[in-house]
Length: 293
Image 1 (cartoon, helix red, strand yellow):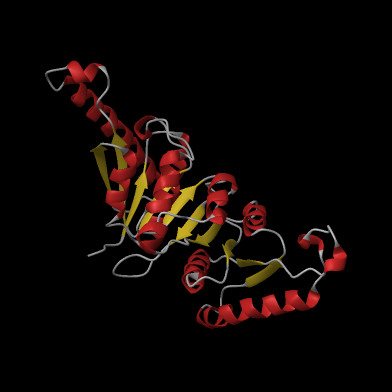
Image 2 (image 1 turned 135 degrees about the vertical axis):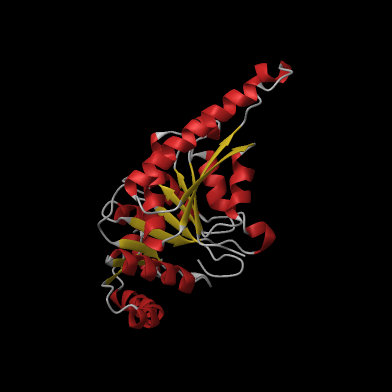
């Protein structure tokens, strides 16, 4: 049974420190348990020839120091939250994915050192964001920002309604505006030649796309009347527009395009570009087994 638990990965770096801060605030907002996880590999070259437990003990002490510091930092940000820590042995990706099975949300920094084996998008963050069975937030850019709108990208996939639900709920909980982004490539007449589609003036097509977005928003506007909504229709790529919006947003939300056992490993080019270039935390909205998140 899934509990209200937020998992945050830490390795003692500034990136993971920002992730702990963000996760602590979210745990406080949801009144959820915050589980701080550090994954370490104690099989150093010299440890392979050690017949005792000296190196493992040292590795555990270092791991406990990392999680202890993260716990203190989380409680400084949100004193009333319930916090527990775990120092796990193994490869960070499979261990974090294992922990994610019982999480409502996983939060990671965008770069990892130390316990994350110096892997960068971080390779660990990217793989967890891509494969996790629950929503994932990658804290990057201005990770400590708490004002500005919530930005969300809306497309024609089946997941659009779930992404909007996540975005409206996040905006309502933060008393924030919602910036809805819709992009499309309009049909271009042959006589235009080499003029980029992004520069073509298509007011009728733009109005039709705007109407489509409004039809998707109608039910959510009714449910969350207190959330101000701004809709942007653009001919540019969704990643380019959302990265631009991220410079004034406190959070960008996009969907995961995974379908089935194999396709679930795919995040989509928009989400991937945001994980590399957004100037604020990125939320990958994903449904979870046994409930919605």
